[in-house]
Length: 228
Image (cartoon, rainbow, N blue to C red; front, side):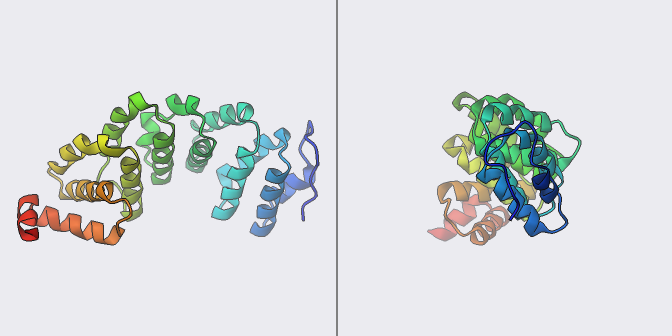
């Protein structure tokens, strides 16, 4: 077990800092747990920096939890600064942590460049953060911005985008209708799959995708005809 300080200090525990960068992922996980169990603002920089380079998913998740345990007034500005990092993982993890903190003042920092980031993981994190932090008056614009990316990426990326759109509710329907008329069948399929998930968010994803492909292949009118 990594020794930790029981009270906040002006400088972070050096043994804990070493453990956060240890070769063994279990040691790093234990260190992140310790950092969250006894929150110390002096650890903020070390935790943010580790998020940007940590290769292990479970350790990253624990680092996020440790950051959410620190005062938002110091954590949020530091994470916002990470959104401009050249390191994709730094941007992605900062977005993920900000979505967990849920501070609505962050919304202006979720820029179009992040929503359309060339790195899929950054974009996915931006979509998830955006639907949590978006003000009510900005939801239609966000829906249009997200729907413009229908057809992007692999199955996991497309499912993330569909889930983000569905989280915005029925107001995504006009944007989906526009995408359903797109010349690209991949875009149309993704739009139809998203509409099916909007109707039934608990539906089996594989079944939804197959049904969307069928709709695009046959046309909505013929599919409705076969269902009669």
